[in-house]
Each structure stands twice: as C-alpha cells, then as structure tokens.
Length: 276
Ligand SMILES: Nc1ncnc2c1ncn2[C@@H]1O[C@H](COP(=O)(O)OP(=O)(O)OP(=O)(O)O)[C@@H](O)[C@H]1O
Image 1 (cartoon, rainbow, N blue to C red):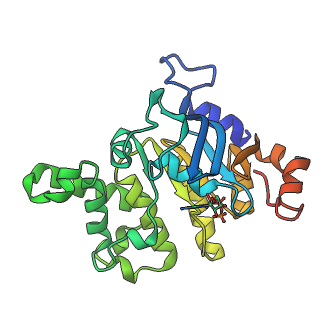
Image 2: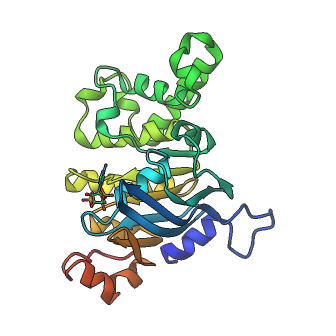
Image 3: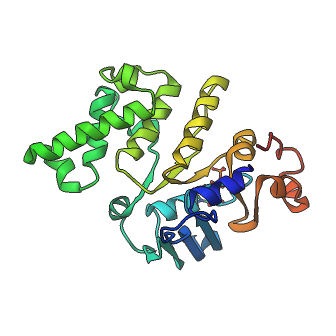
C-alpha cells in the first residue's frame, strides 16, 4: 500500500469504517499572507492538511517556509487570509492558546533546559499546556502526577526512558532532537509542527527520526519544514513546494519529483531521494 493510501486509511477514509469520520482536514490556510514591513514573505498561500497525514513544506532558501511555519504556530501574525484548525478559525489566536487547542511545535534544542533531567524537561513541557500550571506547579499535586505520567509515556515512545535522569545538555545530538519532539508531544497535540527535524544529524539519527515521524502519524497530523530531500520524498504523504512566498506546486512525492517547475526552482539538482 502506498503511503498516500495509508494516510487515507489513518484518517478514517477507508471504506470499512462505520464511526462518523472526523473532519478530514486537520489544518487549513486560506490565502494566508505575512508581511515584514512592506515585504510579503508569504503571499496568499492556501494549504489543506489532511488529518493524520505527513505533510512537508519545501522550497529554496528564502521561499517563506519558516515564516509560514511561524504563522501556523502563532509566532507571527498574518496580515491577510486565515488559518483553521479542525474547522475553527485560529488566525488571531495566541501561540499558547493554539497549543491548548491542539497544535504544538517541536522546540529548538535551545529551548531545552540543559541542566534539568530529561524527565523534568518533559514534566515542565507537559505543565506548560496551561500557563498557570507552568508558573505555579506546586499548586496541584494531581496535575503534577499527570505531568509525570505524561513524561513517562513520552520517554517510552521516544526511547528516552534509559536516560530519564540524565541532564538534557549531556544527551547526544540525536537524543536531544528526539527530546525536542518529546517537548511538543508532552502538550498532547493533535497537530505537530517540526522545523527541520533532521538538521545537523548523522545517518543513524536521521533514520531514527524518520521512523519516529512515521509513527507519529498514527495518532497525529505532522507538518514539517525540511531541507533533506531524502526524508521528504520517503515519508511525506503530501509535499508543498514554496518559492518566493507562494505555493509553487503541491502533490505526492512522485508528482513533486517529476514536476518540471520544481526542478527549475531547485535548479534541477536537489529533488532526489527514494519514494516509499
Ligand atoms: N524578521 C524578518 N524581517 C524581515 N524579513 C524577514 C524576516 N524573516 C524572514 N525575512 C525574509 O522573508 C523571506 C522568507 O524568509 P523565510 O525564513 O521564511 O524563508 P525560508 O524558506 O524559511 O528560508 P530558509 O530555507 O533559508 O530558512 C526572506 O527573504 C527573508 O529574508
């Protein structure tokens, strides 16, 4: 079965299901525009991200990928257009409220607390779901217990249980990148956003991250910005290619790889990688 079909199955679109299907689109933007002063970094981008799919955003340097990503997380405000999560308009919802509604982003390594243990990092990330809990964790023993349970589940899922007590700053690069994903998972999102999840990784760590992203799609919608075409072509259900702030093309990895416009945008030399 192709990955495309797997995503349809994961999102409840296979013919054998009887339960009412949830809204098939997890996240949607309509004519989204982001301006830095008079410069439009994102220009009228409309995206439709299917539930439980793996959707990557690629494009040459300066294409607007990071800005689009920041608009989805709430770090920058759109100047026009809209963003909908599960059919709810979140275009002007604050970033921490978006986390509460179910969107979390994978934190950068710099957001980890290097002197705190893996478990403590995850406990704090879990409590950050409601700001008052993060600020006053002593207020509720039950919430603390819940946070510890979440930290335990996340460590198990990310194969970090063995290093639960180790300071985050002492982990290998690959473990730190997994912990970043864990910080997002600890908020129990439905949609998870990742900014270059494999950057700076060696071959073995890339393979582990690839498997992790694949496994996340069983119960999450995954959106990621990535330069590594190998991973993009191998695990994505849908690829959106951006250029000069606009959506150039969107399709399956095979469609993208064979698209002449995309080859031109990349000067013909970057769209490689195995397609699953
Ligand atoms: N804070 C900012 N103020 C002004 N211009 C910005 C700002 N951030 C980004 N830009 C500009 O917006 C455009 C898109 O940048 P963005 O970082 O979103 O692209 P990108 O596709 O993520 O690039 P890269 O792959 O190099 O990270 C670029 O021309 C960039 O110089």
